[in-house]
Length: 407
Image (tube, rainbow, N blue to C red; front, side, top):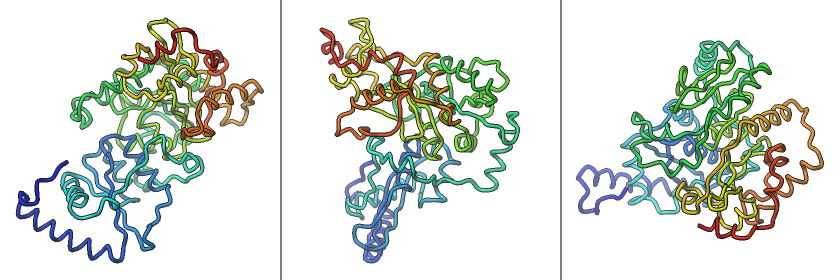
């Protein structure tokens, strides 16, 4: 937002600006004041920025105490914002946005702004070993337990949360997200909930309750298994989103905001339909499998080295893939089931990697150049996914392939 020229400020704004300048100049002699803007209308951005900041070691460069103030507009989840306000100094709403505007354009130097890290710049060691900061009050715990009972889940019963991204959330006409523009450039990340069914029902047969998550979804999950519950369509609440993600055994989902909630509570997760190829999961607890890149011109799946050499591993808009005539192939039901079995076995302590698994994992990791923030990262790609797609690790580039992916 751009402020009016100083001469065009209203009289109340000029009075407020004078008070702010006087107060902050006085305070800055004894404390280091920092200000940051939280993207509260998107769950993933809100949680990732806030939790990353809380886990990071924030030290004043001036050798004096530091005060960090955060500002945001309307939140996609007011209950979550309330939990964050217990841990951070957050001012929300339109007046808060106006105050942030005045502080950053007229009062504080540019060095006082808190710049949040991009997802790929995060400290993955911190996400593996750091402690969660969000906590529940006694009343919130009671509310969460009542929600579980209302869904027929007995106390102490294990449950797994699942979710796939679709366009319904950002296109929902009732939500703040839909008023922020055309979100179709994110469509390349979408997936079909039907592909999760074999994994969900296998988990249910193993004694887990399986909760299909989501704030707004295109359609219900088509399962009649009594332990597979469509929380998104029938039971969803703001607090429930947070409480269930904080207490599930593990999470299975695509690259969306709910996955970041799993990160925030150190919940192991399986990242499905990962795209672009440059991404990995966030910690040593986690697994992931990838969407495949199919060349429409050549009618074939591209190898991973081809994708890296073309720069396609960095594409983050639907238009980029369309220009290159690349079709993204979702993970199949069989692939999702296989990596789900692997996660359960790893958590049970029964998983055994073969020498072939370790060799394939090493070959996949070697694709990431030393400068990549994911080079040497300990999260693992699904073992069965690599076994079935070992040919995609081949370095040879077939004739015409580079042209097909260059776009």
